[in-house]
Amino acid sequence: MFGRRPVRAAKGTILARSVSFKAGGRLDAGCLLGPTEIAALVMAGVGEVTVAELDPHDVAQDEVARRVSAAMVPLPSDANLDLGRPSAGAVQITATCAGVLGLDTAGITRMNRVDEGVAVATLPQFHRVAKGDVVATVRVIPYGVKRSALSKVIEDAHDTIRVRAVLAETASLIQTVIGGDGGAAKGEAFLRVRLDRLGVHLIETLVVPHREEALAEALLSARGEVVFVLTAVETVDRGDVAPEAVKQAGGVITRFGLPVDPGARFFAGGLGAVPILGLPGGARDPAMTGVDRLVDRLLCGVSITDEDIAQMGVGGLSSSDV
Image (cartoon, rainbow, N blue to C red; front, side):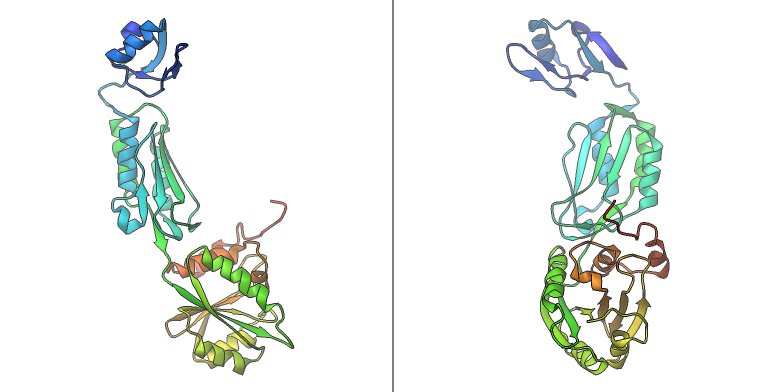
């Protein structure tokens, strides 16, 4: 039940609209109207209040938010998440470490279909997060939800959100140059900013001539857990200098090209267990691109399939007009 009710008949209901007293003080929406609250309203001359009353089949909003969030994150420490205390029908879910957000998007969509009163909102899939960031909220809009609806939401909620922590702690940058440093300082500065956001330390920058032999030697000597390559001229073919240098060093190229703009001229590979990521020229620019999202995922150990990359095309165009 929701509506207006005489104050003296409102005991045991939930106040739906806050009431401020002329003499000072207030009763906040959501409070249970017990004898003390009723007496205060009568003393203040309030005749009617807007209230909500739960029936035996309803569960109060804070309890709904608590149960739903607990189902979404059954083991908070394993999921690198913290569940806030329910307040006004809402629970905030925050990251306890840096990483990327991992979601069961289908499960969360099913949750939001069950009952209009239960709303789950998250950051986007694979969004980069820092420690303390709010990554999701569970909000219960009315003051109560049917027990049957809550049970169905909980069925769909199990283990639907986590933060994938960064696996690599260190990185190396190899830059090739033609007749000078060719903007090497700018490339290093912007990569360092990108890595710092995830707590990855750029431990070295190697600058070598834009030749296969020199780059292959640098790849073999790099000490980082992941190696970034930024060439003097962008890589335009699997047979270009950088991919050939990776193969010359004994590595492999697993992907060349992305359906993003800017950032299409990206390549990925590996040398033993060390990932090698060939950055496009746009890495010398502070603007975020689809490549940044891909790199974040790789640093957090999220496998990337050809289908994942194909799906990057929708929304892969970056525009200053958006």
